[in-house]
Length: 369
Image (cartoon, rainbow, N blue to C red; front, side):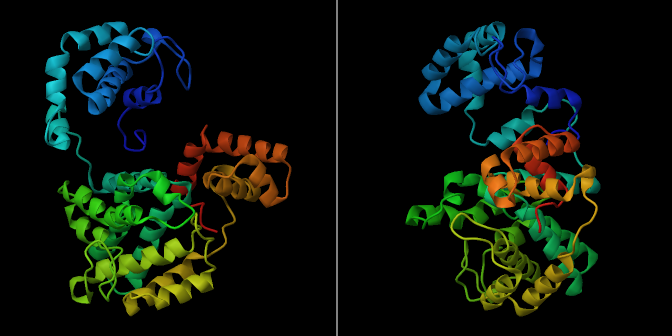
């Protein structure tokens, strides 16, 4: 993500070393000592201190840094923290962490232009969709449907940009809900449902904090509203929903229906269309989304990075969290053949982990059948 956001090679390298240890027993590369970047070593001390401070207070933070010094943490930096712990922890105990972090940023603040803003929002979409293997590609799918449907409805260029961007970030609030809730195969408890019902609220509050994204806050935060007032989190009725919000809601429902969830398989396109039409949603928005979906379902013949048809099939299942054995059973091929396909697609796409493969699949729109 740092590379996609253009944050520089030094930061990319430091992030890749987030879980390396001073004694060389960390991962993924197993480097240690001064081979670990200075930024990563500082961040490790801060991470340990704040993790224990948030749970057990100052004494817990001091104890953890002492214990981990020379093993996980750079001993010189651990010593410096311990010497100034009172001052540092007091600085960290702020009412608004966002304001404090922005105030601490050195040098000129990095502000993105319109083109890079699109890239950043796509990065946000992919990142929050990594919350669960059931959600990979969902936000991009909603954004794509909403943008094409907006053209059908005669939206202005500015409105199409807005609804696409709102689609990309409509589910940011999912990050505030435990993954176990999204991955639960059975019925949700009342408390779990309340968490789910609040995720559009969290989306809205996140977007409202940034002036460039604030115009997206309301439509993104209303993507689960229904015309009859039965939606959430507001329970807004028809008069409170503008056409961007109505379109986004319809796009979200259709996209979700076409995706498997832990409690149900994916709907067929026809079944998804029937279900969408039965919802309390704007009729014009529903019709436009269905038209957009029809245009979207086209066979692809040339895959990115030179992937073969079979490698794309394996990638889709891998990104959904399936084991090698489960993939072999689904595709009626041997486990060793699956391993070979995975090795090839990793090499071609330039990734080394399932999460990396999932991001590659989302970036290149490979998760849609």
